[in-house]
Every structure is written in structure tokens, then in C-alpha cells.
Length: 153
Image 1 (cartoon, one colour):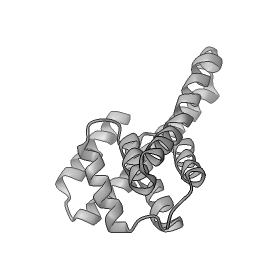
Image 2: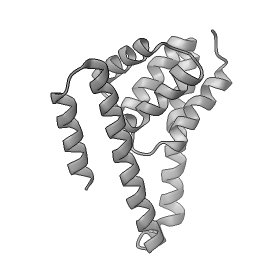
Image 3: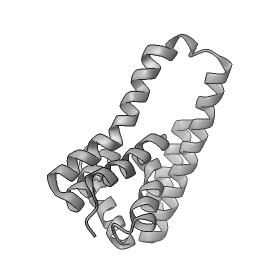
Image 4: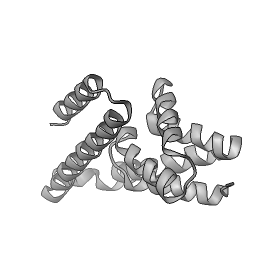
């Protein structure tokens, strides 16, 4: 099945826009979108691609977007997915830096980011559990999760 660049952009933009916490927090959302909702790859292929992207230096989400975009639609797909997954974060950071800097100590803003932090930890735990189940390995995943939980407290 050949997917249009527009549809590819919308999928990756949605993942980038509605997932906080970086690449590891995006893994369950990528899986749902690419494997379950749009059937763009099989589950085994998804985890193989994930393993390859984890071994490449750089941000996991960007590596994954570029690799899968390249596989699905060539160079144009890679550029499209890379822009789509990074654009929401860029716009959000730019907005926060320019408009919300004066409200950083406001109780509602502090409460929002505490909630975001908890949801990021939960998404990372889900991703780690999925990887642990897939690869039947516990030590590395458990250590990664412990370090992530400790670092986010």
C-alpha cells in the first residue's frame, strides 16, 4: 500500500503534537498508528525498525521518522516525516519561550508540567514493557526504566 505524503505528514504530525517526552514516549503511539490503525508495517517489522533506529546516534523519534518515511516513500517521505514529527515541538517551544515565560511560576503552569511529567513516565513504562515482552529480556529494560523514573522525580 502506497501512502500519500499528505497522509504520512498528518500521521507523524499527530504523533509529534500529542506525545510529550521524546522518542521513548512516542513508541506506543507510533505502533498504534503505523501497525494497528494504518497497517503500514507488521509488528515484527516495527520492532526491527525500532531496534535499528535505537542504534543510530540522534533523537529516537527523528531517527524513526526518517527511517520509516524513507522506507515508505523514499527521500520525500523521509523529509516529510522528519518535518512532521519535529514541527509541533518546535512551535510549542517557540511559543513557550516567547509568550509564557512570564508565567513560569504560576501554580496552574506548574501543575500542568507535573501532570505532563507523570504521563511521560507512564508512556515510557509502557514502551519498556512492550520491548521487554517482545525481546524477552528484562535486565536492560528494567534498568532503563528505573533510571528514567529516578531522573524524572
